[in-house]
Length: 443
Ligand code: NDP
Image (cartoon, rainbow, N blue to C red; front, top):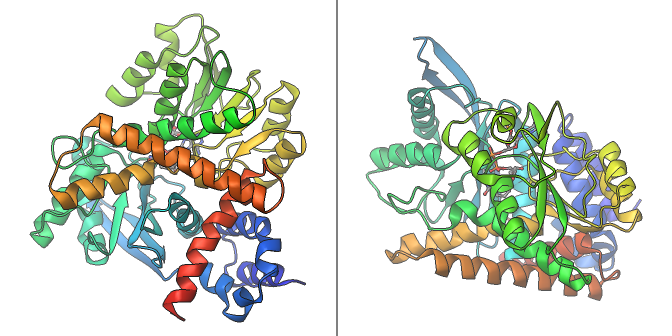
């Protein structure tokens, strides 16, 4: 058994039941296996053992009072995975599925992703099993304040700078920030994804989705294609999905699907994003409402099964949403490119099936790095006490995403298959973090 397999075996034994964490580490380490095994220093210095164990995992109680006058209790988490190349950085997720395994997988992925950006940020993730759906504004505020009553002691603008993720947008970040400021008496850039009415960055909200499309456009170009005139399936109808669909449309594509956790819509005329924004951003309703505005579209209840023919698929909802049967549907219908907007949306067997059938694959840790990159621009804005405009932040985002693609593409060429962007991303991310770990000593 080689070094990588031994580390994986131990990790699975030491972290029982943490399936998402096992999956994320397995996917990354298997794709850098030959690179790691060809240099003894990694084993001699136990780099993989250290890289796969979080520096700190914090779990805490969040008690809050609902509109029903009852006391509710949720679990809160912050997993600070690796700080070798900068302060911890990564989003907060509020969703009933949140558990330690999901936090660890996301924080591990974030460490590689942040390294790939080339920016000085370490990896972390946090959140709660609190479900914001159906809660009043007052309940959301009450929960966020109580969440911050514990989180504040672990974060700071030079320690750990959380952002949003599923269930955490500008509204939640605002309440979290307000409470941090109240407790610490410190108006600092401790959170990103803030509203534009105080310290937020123009363009941050759009950055992950737009960044995904900037990255994917480069991937398409390298393989003789572009978004122009293509049919695109998008999953999700949240922050990432809406802005990915918007930029794909601006680049001349026709986006025909979107989804939420209740079901999915297919609009053969192309998704009307103004309607989706109205439903999702303004009134926070279910996606089936779309039919009321676009009667020629079709709504199907349940999980999106990727059965609509398309050239490009952009999974932008959640982890493991694109499974083997979905990959088979996509291949059968002639998909050419899959690029991940969500974190780990494609299962390992689905990824293998797609790649072995000639589909060009853009992995999340590179393709969706636009959000965190834009967050670093927000941090720079806050530290410099300046206000950057949307033109500046959008151009910077585009530069960063194009440079990420160029770097993972050249790494893929250097270490094997020129379109193996999965290995390209993982080797690139690993090289920088491991080199910093070796330089900083055994910690
Ligand atoms: P949002 O909460 O804005 O949207 C999430 C979307 O995915 C919603 O439409 C939601 O539907 C759907 N969804 C969530 N869980 C499930 C599920 N179990 N099954 C089916 N659909 C589901 O989150 P974001 O758009 O911010 O995040 C989406 C993905 O992108 C996540 O994987 C996140 O980690 C990743 N990401 C986000 C970044 C950001 O800047 N926001 C940065 C990098 C990655 P419903 O409303 O019904 O729950």
